[in-house]
Length: 331
Image (cartoon, rainbow, N blue to C red; front, top):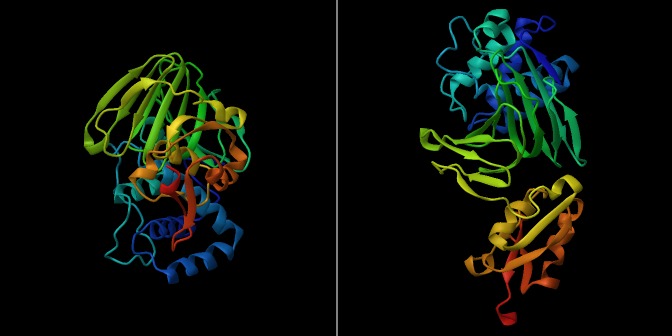
């Protein structure tokens, strides 16, 4: 979807309501009653659903807007917002979201706001898309990303999933991908970004990229050359550099390659395709190794078949997660 810097079709009150519900649904203390009230509101009018989706798109990218330059005076307060609310994201993200709805040319000229936001999603099928700047992207199953066009840069927010980018060269407008607690900056190149929970892996196939981990507010940068990978998590102050793993890009052909990995290493790759994550019973089970090439559409069948190829058995916990248990009698 496309979201312009201002929304003349939507009334100020509707923008306020959409912003309010976006804040409340992201609040840690949002109640079941509030969620039910939101469902009634969003289903009562198609315009409500459209404006909420537009506000949600803005919310996803607002944390990457420049804080030091963002004016906040004059923002309308959310309607009937309770006074003591704990939000998962800073209040500035809300201000940014509202500004992006209400501001126009000034925000674009100052580099505060994008003049366009587009959302891309791949559900049960791989998807290829051309971004507004001419760059191409391929999205893995279950992947969502947002593209924002700023005056001085091109910005992508990868919330979850995996994408392969072929970036159109533009030396004056860097292309920045935000994923987890870090970012990838290029001017024109080809690379892959995989994100699961707080783990991020960047694989470079052509050109060069700058990978930054900003965990714990520490700015650490690593530079990749083709055939290299950078990995970082929520607590890593510096990206970890290594040679690219075999099969890192096999997903583009619908394949999951597990190249003699421990189950602890393999599960994030497997869980990426499941509705409920598979768990490990203990450290001994985590060390069992697995290999093979599998269809990304049938990862659930792979899990159910594990006892046939590994010394393990499967159980379920109280939350309905499949648990892999090492079968000591088979060691």
